[in-house]
Image 1 (cartoon, helix red, strand yellow):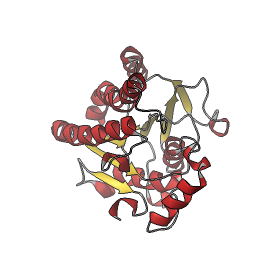
Image 2 (cartoon, helix red, strand yellow):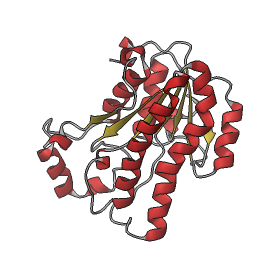
Image 3 (spheres, rainbow, N blue to C red):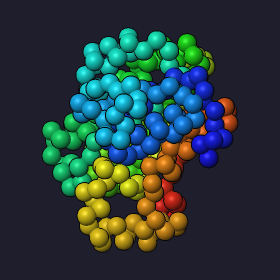
Image 4 (cartoon, helix red, strand yellow):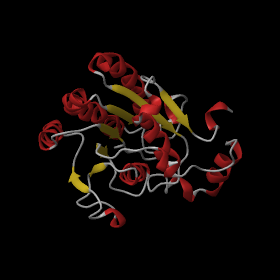
Length: 240
């Protein structure tokens, strides 16, 4: 799948790729396809397997000045992928934490998009945001996450319209239940794990690479007439 995409000479920034999960998988997939890849995260270092593999920038996406400062250090950018997000199942009814989730997941996505818009305009680049299946239906234990990701989907549509004259395509991916470090806490509940698999038509949880392939597609010329879309990648969970 990855070999069918050629990103030789392309510059890619994956925001939120410091832990084992979707962002890291996307970064590796772009690198395998020939791109020069920069990743960010809030940790001092990325996950052990990715140390030294990519240029790594510690970044707090809630800090507008820091995001814009990073933009000043990157000369050329062809693809921006926004993966930075937080959630805490069962804790998001607390107002201050709700606000924090929205600040990271939604405002952080906009901050990086805004900071790197000039780069993408110059290259005729691609912006891919990571939304969620929770953008489409409610979650009693993740209300902030769901609200923020629904807003990310709407932001994607608005930026797609606004930036189309600049030659920038803007799309999103809505993952379902994926085996990541972020989902580890929810996967300690065997009933929850079994219920997800039972409802999912493809009968399993997704893997980060299931998302990476779709992101590469949206960043490639194979999707040249797609903008403003949010593609569900959830094994059919959202259509049941």
